[in-house]
Image (cartoon, rainbow, N blue to C red):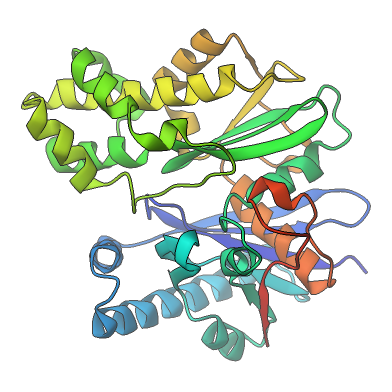
Amino acid sequence: MPENYIGIMCGTSLDSLDFSLCCFEKVKKLKTFKSYRINQKLKDKINLCKTKPNNQSLFNETDEEVTRFIIHSLHKFIIFSKIKKIKAIGYPGITLVHNPNKCISKTLGNLKMIAAKTNFKVIGDFRLSDMKAGGQGAPLAPYFHEYISLKEKPFINILNLGGFANWTYKSGNKLMAYDTGPANYLIDLISNRYFNVPYDRNGLLAKKGKINDEALVAMLSDRFFDQAIPKSTGFERFNLKWLTKFKDRFKLTNKNTLIATVSQLTIISISDAINSSHLDSQYIFFAGGGSRNTFIKKEILKRTGLTETKSIPGNFNYKNLESSAFAWLAMKRDQGKSIPKAYLTGARCSRKLGTIYR
């Protein structure tokens, strides 16, 4: 009997909760995928919680609402997928605080409550497990990226364009991965705040603006971009406060100029990372919501000379790759298997990622 695992993921855009039902025996396969949209009221509350992570009453209230939404969505997904036996569920949480230096990972979604209310084994705290072993707590999805591409020749490099960009590649037959910096997060922030739209569809807004080269150079001088790997980042560093600093300093009052300049920041920081990677293969697969931004994709391909591949093994695609990764990580923890290649996150040794809640 094949063992089924569910992975649940919510990106920084908070658009939806993504569910992947996977089976990893013999054939690596995604069986079913479904997204459940997060309503604006809950999204606003989560975003407020991100700005006030130490407000305990706000955290408790938001955590309860998120947990209820997860349980409700999970019940719907079980019915939709027509599956009765689930071995375990992997859920990394919605990140509020990610601080590897202090070994702090604060997330939304009560794992004990989800396990108790659904009678399923729930596995989470993946990032915290890595931090306790001295790692950055991220990126973790590249372990899964290697698993699905293991027998592919040539190896398919994967660029995940979520709120922040994560780059997985092979160099000298050695798996490498790290966060390159912002992808959609700052662009979406500008789109919401100044254009009243959730995101810049195909870069149409960015293409209308004139890039402020002086501001762009200053943004690219952020210490993170020169930091040695392993490294990870998030909205703790690149956020509205960070953006406003450059907006005020360079008087970026024209909203088209602002979004054009920040879009270029995404394009150049990613392209520079790729061009310094000494790749074994010239093939790239784009994952995450940002893969739908044709403008950014075309610019990255033009600057790097890589060839895009639009398919990867196992029925996985740009929408379901990350949620499927946490189904796989749940399977590894459920089977008591350690994750090797600790160097990817900077951990001291191979470690079992995740805590099991029953």
